Amino acid sequence: MKCSESTQNILEALETDGAVIIDSLISKSITSEITDELRPYLDACPRGMNDFSGTSTKRVGALMARSVTCRDLALHPLINDLCAKYLEEFTDGYQLNFTQAIEISPSETSQYLHRDRGVWGGYINRKIETQFSTIWAITDFTKTNGATCLVPGSQIWDKDRVPLENEIVYAEMSAGSVLLYGGSILHGGGSNTTESEDRLGVFIHYCLSWLRQEENQYLSCPPEIAKDLPPELRELMGYSLVSPILGYFSPHDKKGVELVSPKHIFE
Ligand SMILES: O=C(O)CCC(=O)C(=O)O
Ligand SMILES: [Fe+2]
Image (cartoon, rainbow, N blue to C red; front, side, top):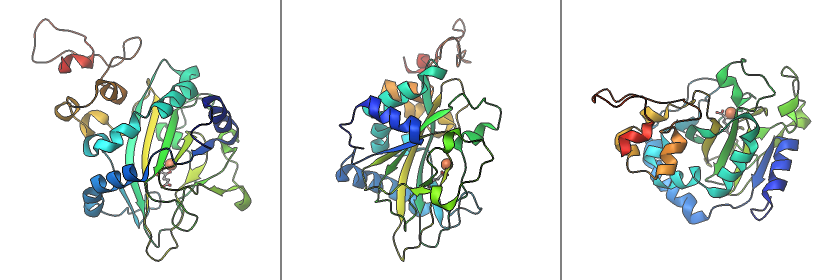
C-alpha cells in the first residue's frame, strides 16, 4: 500500500490478510544510516546455531541503545497510530516488545513457520491479539534473498492447520518499505539462494502493555542510556506506569519515596 492510504484502509487490510506492506515509508538515506549504525554489531555477531535462528543468519538486539536512527522508526507517527488502533480493543496501552536486526545471508534455509505470540506460550486466549509488529526493509526483500514468508488469513485459522505451498506468500518489498503484521499470522524468514546478497531487516515489535516484554528493555537500554532518549521513547520502552498500577517501584537508595512511576529516575 502507499503511505498516503488511510489508516482505516491499512487496518482493514491487516485485519483481512493478517499483514500489509507500506511502500517506501522511509528514504534510502535513512536505510543507509541504519546500515552504518548496525554494521559494527552485525560484523561482530555470531551466526545462529539452530533451526529457528538459522545458521547463516545474524540477529542483533538492543536497537534503542545502539542505533539512533532506529529510535525514530520505533516512534514513527503512522506506525504508532496504527499500533494504538490495532490493539486498543485489548489494552489501555502498548509498549516496545522486541527490537532486532536480522540479516539473512546466502545458503540460509527457510525458517519454520510460526506465530510470534508463541513467546507467551499458549496461555493467552486467541481472541486477544498480543502484538503489532513491523519489519523495516533495510535492503530490498526478494523471494531469493530471504524475504519473510507469510500465510495470509492464517491469523484466524485453527492453530494446527498446516498451509499448502500455494498459500504461502513472500513479503517482497523495496528498501525503505515496512511490513506490518500481528502476533497470530503464520510466517518465517525465507531462504537465501543468492550468491552474495544479504537481506537486512529491522524488526520493531510492540505488544500489549500488560504483557512481559520479549526483549528486556531495561537491561538492553539501561537508565544511564535511556536518560538521553526522548521521554516518549522511554515511556514506550516501559519506563512508565501503566494503568492502573503496573510497573511502579520504590527507589532503594531513598527514604520517603515509595511506589512511584519509573519516570521518577529521570526527574
Ligand atoms: O527474518 C524474518 O524474515 C522473520 C524472522 C522471524 O519471524 C522471527 O525470528 O520470529
Ligand atoms: Fe517471527
